[in-house]
Image 1 (cartoon, rainbow, N blue to C red):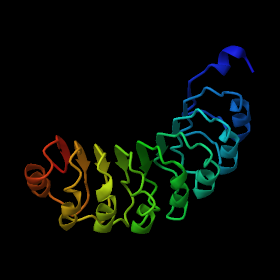
Image 2 (tube, rainbow, N blue to C red):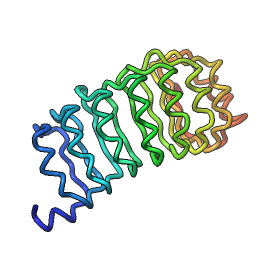
Image 3 (cartoon, rainbow, N blue to C red):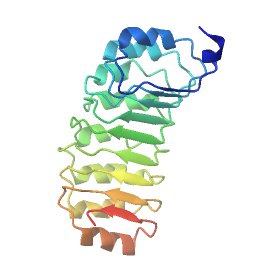
Length: 209
């Protein structure tokens, strides 16, 4: 391993043909803090080769072939603060592995495989400031109730779900919320405006608008 690369802190490999075999070459990057593997051909099995990157804080795995099994191989990365699983096919079962990532500030799981049951494993990630659960069409108002204790949230997206205006009451404790996106839900701009004026004074960006 080149000595200069050992000091590397950020590595951007998105939209490349990097695969699982290539990940073994990253094992010596002990100072790596940010790794982007979105839209690569890395598979679940290959992710285990990242288990020794103890300094890693940000990991982008926005790739459709990544599943619950891939997440299981990352549980040693307890220092993660940013985890992007946007297109990954994570299900309720896979969310059980999120308990290892207590320091998460930002989490995106938008592959369509979550239900309210999976959100139960997200509700205790108390440091979250950004949560994107859009495209999970089975999520209901129960999800909003479950995350109502995540009072550090600044940005929340539960678009393209079954959330309705009745569920907005659960967001009242989220006083730090600045951005709320509930597009393609049974929620109107007027519903959100009422919530904003009465309970969420910091809310500046919202959709529908």
